[in-house]
Amino acid sequence: MSDFTIGGNRIMARNFDVRHTIESGQPLTFLADCDWPANKFSYVDNGKKVTFKISRQNGTTTLMMARGAPTSLERAAERFRMNERLDDIYKKINTDRFMKDAISKYKGMRLTKNDPWETTVCFILSQYSNIKRIRQNVRSIVENFGTRTIDGSMRFPTSEELRGTTERQLRALGLGFRAKYIRHAAEYCTNNMDLARLGRKEYNLLKDSLMEIDGVGDKVADCIALMGYGRLEAFPIDVWVKRTMERQYFGGRKKKIDDIHEFAYEQWGKNRGYAQQYIFHSSRDRGSRI
Image 1 (cartoon, rainbow, N blue to C red):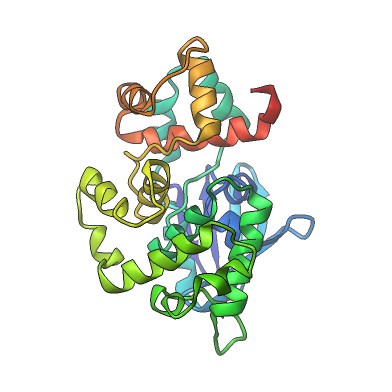
Image 2 (image 1 turned 180 degrees about the horizontal axis):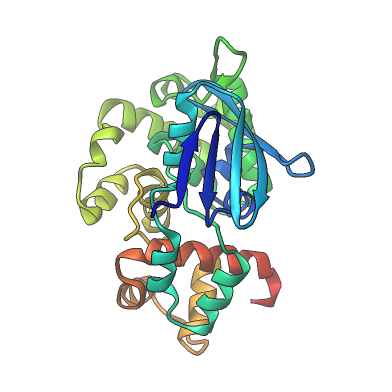
């Protein structure tokens, strides 16, 4: 049985918590506009603004399209990866008490699949930053270098459009040292890399290719692989995840990134990307208690 159905102007989905999903540090965290008291959220999809009203009853979440084209429903189902049965994934990653508690607390949080270029920019900006600043940086880039669409929405600038900027222009937006990496990524992806074609590569080759971009290291490459290409084998390790993994699975001992990758592979196999998202959101939510 599928986790979702589409009919009329709505999507009905099991195992889907919209707020946990959008607030969990994924590209939609940086790109969506959310009004939780009004139970609605919006984002620009394929150059057009899409708005959904949210309701929940008897364990089913309904997204009712208030604004957008009919194809937006199918694209939303793809973006929120509703074809993935969370109950099956939970069975595979629920291997210990910590993960069991994280799944229980954030049940229904889904990984999202986003445009690879947008994902690349978002996670280059995420380095040594926080969600508030990343959102500000992303919005500044869109407002200053994006293009306005027929419905008045601002389209995320392509790599070619950002290639026409200077590092000084990007620094003026408050991007700091990240400006030179965004500028290089725009140049490199326009001239040397077809991000769409990269998706055909096996995971390790995909990750190696992404790390050819200046400013894209192990963690950012895994973020792009996971949330830009849907590769559940990816296991991004930032300071939050590293600290939590060391505390929960290594008795507080410091571990190398390669050791944590190996442990994740053995513990959660091909679904380790989902395990990572629950670890990341749980550790960031708990903050200083970790």
